[in-house]
Length: 326
Image (cartoon, rainbow, N blue to C red; front, side, top):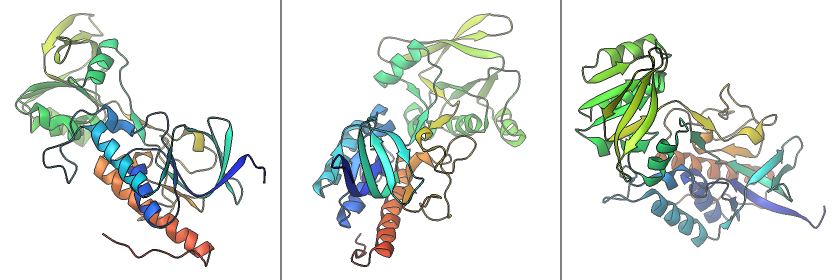
């Protein structure tokens, strides 16, 4: 083996709630985990101003603050947290090989994939402005809907997820306006019927977002355009929700890890974090297209670390499985 190749017992790819939770458990199990933070250290939560639904924070916490605390907790148990991202993998043989920043080569006994998924946005300059400001743009109704109680909001999307989120928002908000680009939903008939029958959901078909309006700090409205007549009008709202899908950050694993049709990693065995490659495990939103919550991601991070620990113990009689502590 070349001196330039590093050998590690447990490599964690990604630094959201799943990655850091996996690191905490792996470190406490004497697996000496190495964690690469990726292109977005801290994951999607770093773009969230307030987190009020993660247990243990009775007064809430900002997303960036919570991720710093998770990172510090992982480091407390001697997790080796590093900058950089994995640009290439090779799981074709018995040795799990990865490359960092297309340069450094690492061979890992176990790998935990925690690369997450990225929400899709429209790409409008005004949308991105208020997203970065935390002033009214969101891609998660379950996460942020609570902040818009008794207010009026817009949601963009036409699939099942958009309908589910619109229905969720309708229970909190005074009025929900759905913007559907075509003349019909892509959602299942039962979901489309549900939103159509909800009194405070207003559906605008053949309608697209022209611009997100605001006062420089927070969203105050949305200018929309009918793509048939080209007419525009403004809708006064305080929240702008985007529900046009997520893209799992799993492209580098194609050809080695089994993915579904949209790129989410498939579990090899239900109820575990195992992938089709022995010794490679997955946690968080890279495999979860249903819940996509910080708390569920953290839970699967724990599962992945425990599965990796048992995998090592089965391969190496000298490696002892630690006694779980809570």
